[in-house]
Image 1 (cartoon, one colour):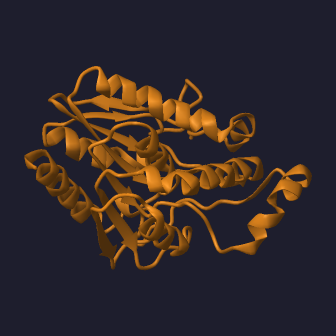
Image 2 (tube, rainbow, N blue to C red):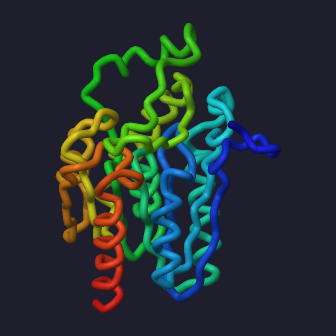
Length: 251
């Protein structure tokens, strides 16, 4: 279902809250702000200033992703960061899936107080990805990857197809982020679902191995699948993230 503005219902960007601490939230590939809106609302209720942008090529129809590059996604993240920087003294970044890659790239380039990453993706063991540059010239999309959620009846409302040109851009983002991981020195709270049908464990192990930060706290999620921010462990993610921010602000 789409809105009159061409956006999928619930895909609207969100800006709200107040206070001296800002939190930038970044959604994942083929998804939209809907996957993080409960987290954004929780942060606002706790007194934070929040920005949750809609990444270019997302929240409308999957064909729109054919016209954007990963640098367009990153530029949208930086614009949201700048809005927070104009109003707050410290900025934390919270992200899901591909949003985690964008958050890490931002952490390599801009001063952030801390990163809260839920099942971030920075690579894959799937050898089929090697054929993507050629395959994307022959085929436009493959099956959808959204709504990997353990809780019955909950939908992410991501795209119903996965655009291959978009995946090519995702792999380019991965390469950039992996090269910049040593530059990321901010504290990290890393949430990882034990069962994830979208992102394999290579991403978490790569981050833990190569990141420049000396403060990385890993939390395993036992009840949720990939979109854990809409799943059983969402309350734990929200509460632990608030505690993480509080510990760093005090320090």
